[in-house]
Length: 458
Image 1: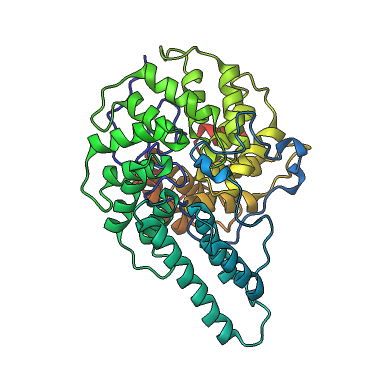
Image 2: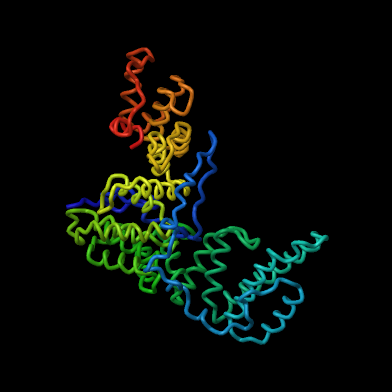
């Protein structure tokens, strides 16, 4: 029976039996103000190349059968008839003036909110080709001021409009539209929108209470708002609540049965921003003795595929492993393995980058041409992200002279970096190098299996 750890702190890894799980508390856009965390620029040696010969239509990202075209966390009121058709609105001063006149007598708050959002778009695009850019900048600033004034009015009026409250909260949280960052103000607006049963705002209130953004930390209150947001149909909240109940975090008792139900609901409406539940369910179905769900390798594979095709890097890496080793009903297929590793590596997944290093180290006949330089560069890219296995691999490549000129001192430095993270093979190698006086006897080029046995590329 699997042993699940106590609930981790915000942003930590979920220690489920398969180690590719994401930070369960941080799906994309799940911070107080949404958005995804970008990768730091890659510094160091030249970037490795992506295998172009693997541009197989089979690996084009396709929507999951479970994907919904409209998120349930979007307020259904957005389906109302708009004051004007904004399918492809022009961005001209004349059109803006006409739009302003049309909207003035419209009592619908949504119409005014859409007008304010249009002004923001217009401020980004209007006058791009004009000669007098100073005048354009001044006009753009006026549009942003008008937009902010409209949104404030909608958010603060007696019958406040929840979408405007949510939008303004994001602005205070991120400092956009010229506002100073004010987490307390953002939290207050999220809370006011949540009181009107705004699903996404309820989720943000939960996150704020969990991490202490704009308010004090309150795990019980966070849990309550995650449940509210999930009940209102917010996909990220369904996933989060499922993991809370699975792990027994935020003061909640473990409730595996309810947890699985929430994860299934989140998986049913998974999209590119919220593929996490698919991956978590796949891991549970992959476990032989989970006692939570039926052990079903084929179904686990299908769930990983759905998440991978939604762009989820950890599922893409997992499929690369499956096709490399022939697990979860997958045949051993170097082409598919390399293709899935490549998709994950393109998004900066360090494990996938190291896996590609391994494939380049030996090549695959008819699929991937062997390349020492690419093997080294992919390992170095992963090592620069702090992956200890990759640090060891770079040390090994430098010691043997694979893809880089043989350099014992350089190898030592990478071994020491890996050893500092507790990598035992790096520790042993440093000890052996010291004993042998930096000389390595009978060092030959490893086969793929030998490289894996020595954990160079595994």
